[in-house]
Length: 458
Image 1 (cartoon, helix red, strand yellow):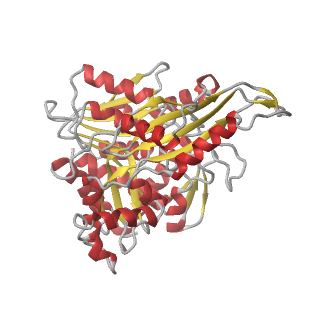
Image 2: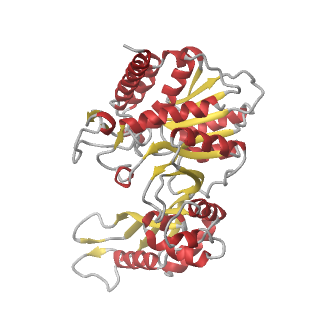
């Protein structure tokens, strides 16, 4: 066997071992539940207990702390050569949304492999959201430790245990770091990915890096009135009034706006566009009204980029089929655009619904996150790591539509970025929080390389 063949064989063996460790952790059903009493904490204990066995160097050379009520939120410290420098934080969460085997092509916690070569797929809940990133980070650190790498400055690894529900694990870790006077130079959490086919006229893959997050607010719409027997209903029941409020809200969307981040994203992509939209994208600032119109019509994702969105996710009425409801309630999930506020959002809802009999209240209100720098050394570190692993991709800032634990770290860092280093097709993105979640094996292995690049720059 030639030296080249030996290197290739060794690399393949390491990849196989890494993949098996990943599959081991995917098989542990660390499902977060809003009803905390229904959570299987034994699964979380099993996950935490498995890590020292799977990553012995990490646990021999890094300091590990357990936080949270049950010690499931994990914080690792990798001491650098210069302890006085500002550290880097790499984040992920290892809890997943619940799943049953119903409707899955492969059981969600079996971690089955299909396909061959570069087309191999790994099927499991958590492959994309977000054990894939958590395990890739651990693989990167384990590999660098084996190579004798010591970062210039401290590196922290923060692994949340309840991002999908309350985010208390990450908040607790932030408070611990704040109490110690730790102010990270850069924080990287899950978020954007390497995508294609979202923006017309762009043929290259796009690496979208979240520099902020929309605010998340749960709004409850409530109608209360006299109940009674369903055989003698009034002209307007509580449910009718509530339904009218919902349709009014749906008919009056929030105005579209282009933030500075939106404009920078369009300008960045415009330089690589082809066709008639190139002229529009490269003149973004002068053609903002046209761009707003274009974004609201390209699709659901682009429409959500430029406006606050509302989605009615839960409805409650009577407890019996033949009884009029005394209380009718709708829960609205609101994602507040950067540049807006909770107060402005509630004002729009009241004007749109325009019914004093409908009570509108914010149950859980969170403002949009501050915007992290889109130039300078921290942005360059992220963009350079992307370029090293995905040389054809266009790195661009964007506003993250979902929510991450990273938003809590804005309290202690000015540079919080949201990027998951995996290629995700539209179909694969559609499996997030849905059935048949899966990841390409080659995609996941490239994710490990991305984190290695990030850590070498620390």
